[in-house]
Image (cartoon, rainbow, N blue to C red; front, side, top):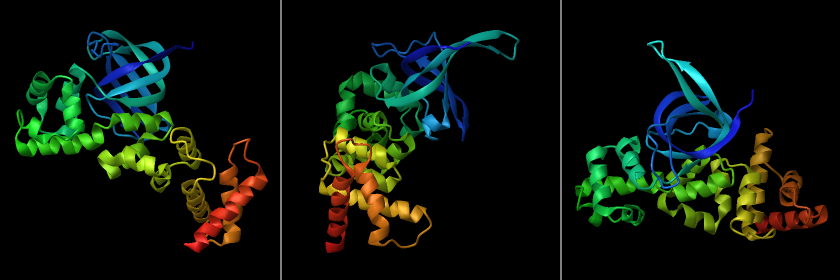
Length: 288
């Protein structure tokens, strides 16, 4: 019997299983007002192909979409518990709001040392402006509640784990979570600016060409003949040649690979046009 389609936000309350083939976690559904419905429990099954082995944490909020069905689980005392289980087809990390940021700061190992008392005090003191304080790395403001060292550690952790807007953008364009997190850890709070400068930087983190190219052309409006794109096709062409077992690449070896990448699936780019762009890209490389 097939289940029904389910779409909503879940705050992680427990990790039931974490393996290479995926992760299973349980949590509370989040209302549209941003409140956790703690009287309800949802089990989320995320296969590795969807989650890409990303290490989730307690308190985080994930937007989940997938097929849901009610399953019965037997507890140790013999009691039969009915649970809503969602087999996830997509998962996106979202920034918590209201009471949820308290849970994230208190439970997540990324914010070690904060704990419930400090997290609740921070939220009572600053309310929703806490996000702006953290985004702006305003340690001076945070020292109204925390020690200077704790404030510094908190904003450092927030650079990576708090930049869920950028992570959401990347995941929205199907950049795997594990790659998106690598990019965030490397560029920290400058991730969005770095991607605006050159979205093809994602290639150096082993991101798929089609995903990166779609992000660059769709979100950042990179033109077909943009110098950044031409240089990136040569870079990806080199990766492709190396993947075939070669230790060096000639222009003749790169030309068909670069042509294929430049043409892609764009019906507006003919093969002759792609070949002309490939010649230009390789000429630019030789002239450097």
